[in-house]
Image (cartoon, rainbow, N blue to C red):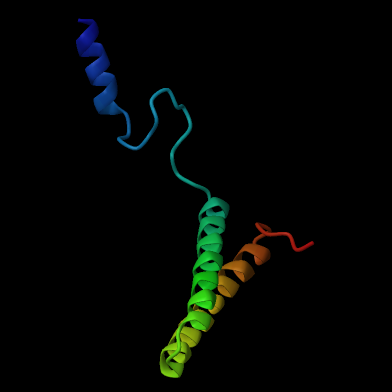
Length: 90
């Protein structure tokens, strides 16, 4: 009987919710935006490094263009966060 109770609890629980957790697993908008902004910062930095490591000027120009797009994505996320009180500029 005890095994059946444990199995029924497990099947009712959301598959991504840690056992014993009473809070939902949904991240807040702030958490998601923070993750996205940190990712954009990382990716932009990776492109920055790659730009300096390629000899071919055409490849550098392409990477530079992609990096600018990543910066624009990051700026859009930042503006959204700032407008909605999720990011305080110091």
